[in-house]
Image 1: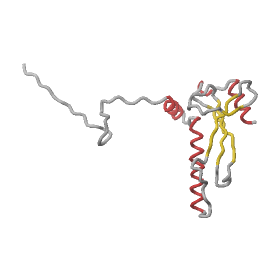
Image 2: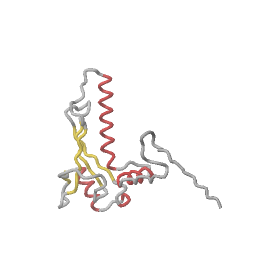
Image 3: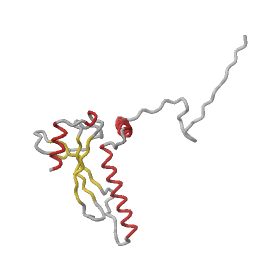
Image 4: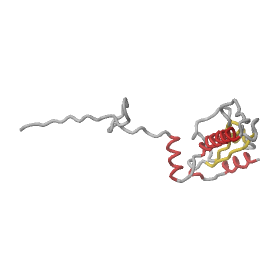
Length: 156
């Protein structure tokens, strides 16, 4: 009996110099990307992405303002939106800023709140707003006592 052997050479699928091949395993999605995917399937936006959306909107407003009026000068600060996440205090009487930022998705409550300080063309020195969002990836977005308290305290 004659034995035939064949050699198959797989070329990179990502372009020149890439190391992935057609049989390379897919990289796993991060926890945040998994949550974003869940939100996309529900036709909504991941709560932690709202701050980024505000950053993009404020930058676009500055771009339009500078183009429409050459006398307008954008602030030197590259970051035009400063966000501070707010959490319920230990006694539940108020919301308070986190001492240090936490990773998206590390929340222990389905209601999220931020204090945004935004440098806009209308208010170049800055203005503050409170942004409140329901995290649909936390307990399927259900409201409990803690979520209600965060919403109420952040709204005051």
